[in-house]
Image (cartoon, rainbow, N blue to C red; front, side, top):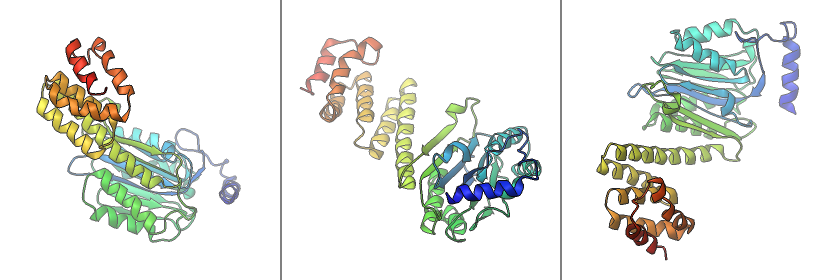
Length: 333
């Protein structure tokens, strides 16, 4: 109720300004998404990313925006999601992140209740914290990143994020997760936790956006969204290895495929699906005996996999050889 009251007060304050005109799209939602976030770029890989946490349902659906070869945007506080779409459109057209942010803010009569950060594919970055954002609120723009927060318990949150990002080793996802964890450890959102999200896109766009997303994860409602987000990142890493393994199989790189499958299983050793398709790949490589311990483990975890196995030859996923199928099935009996 407190946020709703503040929202109504801000609407009243801005009523003389045409009921808060929007951005270039002519719309403005003023959804009260008070939160902490980071936009960043990995100069070694060119990856771009954004990560966020808030005491608000499904924060990732409106705050986090990223496109490979273009940029990343976090739009929050009394959020206008069009900063995300319009920001990416302008950066895709050749504008720098700072110039893009400046142009969009100039068109927004409600800019003083916004908090927005943008980074482009060259690492140019800028952020804005409106003077009417609920305190504690602020941002820090660093080399290849910006951290920003509002409605925080204290003003130590965003400096802690910057320090964690700069001092953490690992890929972009790991460094952004460290920034989120540091924000929470420093006090975080004064209301607590609810949802989180993380997007990382590749440094080299393929022209097919669905292929360019290394991570695209959301925790829409959880008492521990950061813990759950870390779990999902770990699981996504494993599936990325599985996908790389499948690609290696297509290229007839059997050893490369097995390395990728093994890496996936090391991350999530109790995932029956990963073990199963690893075993299937071994059979298709002519290494049936090596596959049997894996099939046995999966069948013990869930007998439905045993039921599935004889159906695969018809789809071309296992050899159409009754002796091989019987040998596999026998380890589950």
